[in-house]
Length: 239
Image (tube, rainbow, N blue to C red; front, side):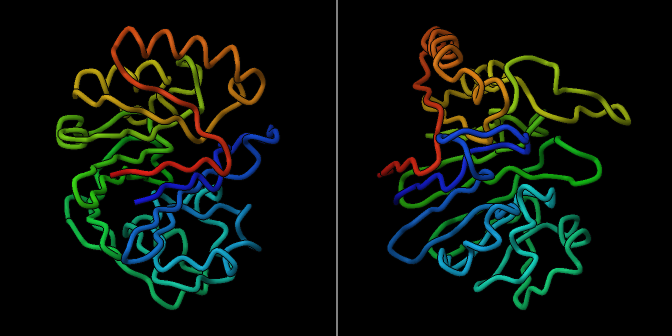
């Protein structure tokens, strides 16, 4: 199974050569190519990418607006996300229900509840192919069920929007926004996840990635976690 980080930028207006396009992930295996999220940056590119299936974590435009002209494949999203995407001309809409496992082109997928936005509820995607299990949460303030989400996970791919709590808030008593990267490292440590990749990179990473990388490397090493910051085009082979 091969991962390609097609894009690694958050919704921030700032970008650079390493983080130019909205975060999107392509998973390629023997049974097809599955794309996760499709922000407005991908509107013109989607026909050429031609994935066999597309999964959405939520309906914010930096994750879904690339579908405004349709899609060349089935699209999986939660009922809440579909309510925000009624005007998109998508011929093959499929339901992604939390807690329900389904197989998408050889990839076993389970949508896990998390907190991010009340207006555009998001899910994390727990995915397994062969013996490798990964968890993808590019927008997350908190995991609703940390143990269930991360148990047995080999690789956590998380939210790089914030280094501290400046992008966290509470609405109706629930955490919203973006969890600091150090908090996500702690989640991984507590769950026994040994590898973490940061995507959905925010302004701090875009402005000075080298300094941020040194800071995070020290924090990750203290927790015995292998950490890297993804960039557009990064590829990783998984067993």
